[in-house]
Length: 245
Length: 345
Image (cartoon, rainbow over all chains, first blue to last red; front, side, top):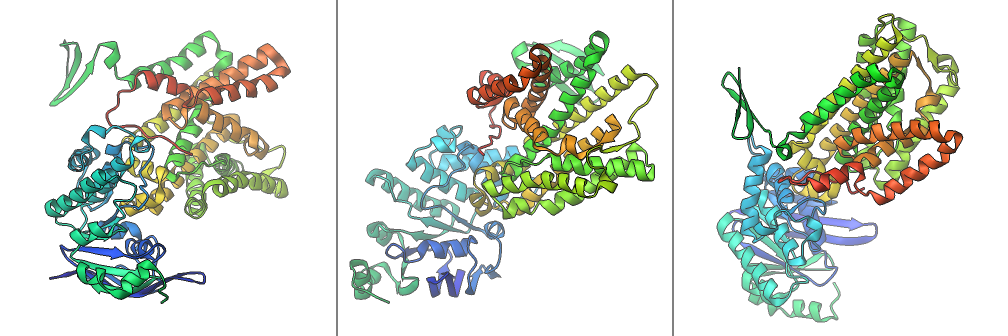
């Protein structure tokens, strides 16, 4: 059981607002860790801090033995950290294929990789996500479900060790949501990635995650097995209201 | 070396290398035809209408400014409204070195490149710090500030009159032949720029530029070193534009801020870029020739009214051709497997 990511007392504030306050936890290699919390709990901010969009005000983030606390986002990606976005952010003027080509080219350093090599590799990831037939469609013309697939293909093409999946089921119908969850499971099996999954849909997380961390008002309030977390009175209180940290 | 026609293909064998061209017109390598026509233009003009040679030189140089500007726009994901600043940098460096130090054009070229590199590097962080309208306004401001400086330091830059007595680029003792040679040089420069930028736009470097152009933050999250790409995409085009400034200085033998630094010149360059094909490199050439010929035609037919009609025609073209003149051609013959880049802003 190797720790792939270790977050140690990280904090982040925006002006007077404490978005993340002294949060610590770690992710074990190969597991699916769920990150839960009501709206505004600081889940996406935490992911932004780990992926490099925001720098932590204090604390320390270690990824596979490297201190990445002050590292720029692109170098974190090259180390093996990738992400999808809560609201899909495709490259609108690039085709699905070219969007994935960018990740394949710049994700992990590969020796002597040409544009054509990257296109071949990108085709594989598009096929995996069921988007091969849409390879020549511009990002702006894809549907929400296809965009979720494209985001995953793009993230996988960087050959990551750890993927942050931000609310993959948001806006999808039950059938599409089921397919999206299956896709994540397959990605884990085939590519051996570790997943940190932010989700509001509790049922999905209870099934897929081995452990769950709960945030509330920027603080970690609970960590443990999904069943234990779901039955924790403090977590229930936070979700149903009348909880103040 | 062996040349043969085989299964509708022209096959050229040089040693162990083999080159093939489809001879069916729809498979013709378009750049070859394109470059061939461009080389024929100055030759035809020289023999038929030598008085039009300066117009062709103008068109070539405008296109040569617009081509690196297109690279700069795509690579930084922002529209630079002050390309003429670098023309000023290159032109004044060449002029001052030539007049005050008596250096020949090829030495002043090195100095213009150096000056372009220094100013390009100094200005390049702007593409990281400033975004959108702020970047546009700041880049718009630099040439105007430079223009004011040329008035403040009149002793050095000679304000309104400009610097004169710059060494000529070529002088064979015959005016028309001089013009023809300069025309060929301007064409060579434009083709060289087109070749360089075309190579870059087909490389993997272009994929990162396209990603930056669409969404910088996502591009960085996918492993693209956004700052590095932006600085390269800003500095090298700045140097390329500065070299055009050097060309202007040694072509006319004079160089003044009021000719190149005001907004009017910038508008012309941007129109070449937009009318030609929204930062499409081949479109810039079409745009350059179109704008210069239209301007010449209207001023000879309509006289002073052309100042009103010219912008109206351009405005109509901007509104009716969202992808510029080159877009008309591309849409009919769109068959690329790997898509070309589009500019959003």
